Image (cartoon, rainbow, N blue to C red; front, side, top):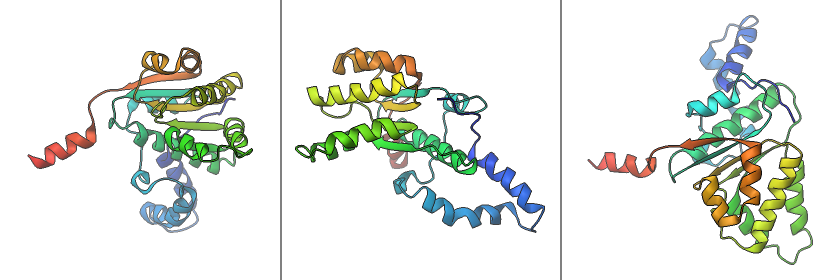
Length: 221
């Protein structure tokens, strides 16, 4: 699947504002403020702590903007380096672009550990497999956050493999974050999953230590 040029949310808002300004005497600040209720509803599934998430990594910006979106992204790095924050920034940007362009694409964001925890609660329910299949096949763009943080079992590894393998074969953009690099993932879940991820994703490493801890340390000085 190829998705044409993605623009930053700020750029889209400015374009919309300039068109509206020609008809109404309104400042840019008031224009953006008037959209707040709409945006709150549009992004209601985002956790409050990530409501204002933005893309702060230059490599992600270079990947996302000014060229067709033909594949996904694998980002890895230590805990607290901003992976989830940036992914929510990408998630918001993609959803906003599709909304503005009237593109009917389903964009789904899940935390892998929480997802499998919820699925395990449905064991014995014939619909549990249906939930996984629905996620795999109906999300045009899928975000898998905190990949392989969950406890591994034969069932979780096979489920992850089926998910990644389907999206790999169908060329569906998949955005994956992990504290582990591909070699470390291979040691944990075997070679099949990381091998496909290496082909279906560009790879970006997030450098630095846990920014949350570093911030607290600075405040205590």
